[in-house]
Amino acid sequence: MLAERAGLRIHEVPVDWVDDPDSSVDILATALADLRGIVRMRRTLARRRPRPVSR
Image: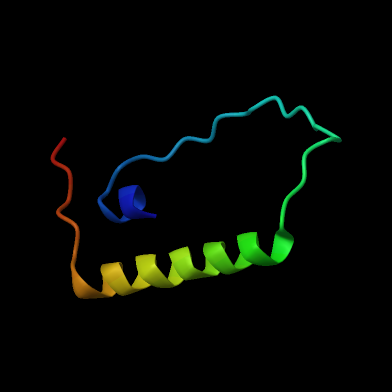
């Protein structure tokens, strides 16, 4: 999002995913951390405007 707002080009890169059946994730804690990060990013973006990248 920051790169896009700064005028940079965005490219998607495919990845090979290998599922690990022995791994575990605390879904609630992970979701809350992600939401906090989104709120923090939006707050930061609301306070400042990134400078466009000159090409």
